[in-house]
Length: 129
Image (cartoon, rainbow, N blue to C red; front, side, top):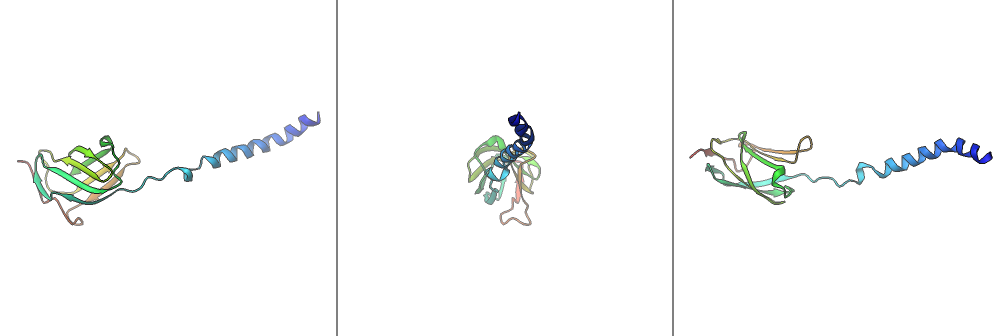
């Protein structure tokens, strides 16, 4: 009878302690943090339809299905992706403007935006041929 009373009295406290240990062990701090991607430069700075745009940088990943590149809102066709280089083909109807690189899936996607005002190498002319 004494053992039963001891378990009944201490059981909830032990359960709370075990839950604390489990939640602490599953902390987000233990998860590897995704490193921020960065575009360091891209080329060419001018071109037309079917031009291969090469973006150099870091932390792009390697899955082309998780990379999207647009120029002035017009989507390109991503051809290859390595952790340091993305190649994308400019499509018909693309005009000069902002280059966006979208890495990953929403809501956790990283969006890198480069426009002709702040970028050292702006796309000056991506007119259809």
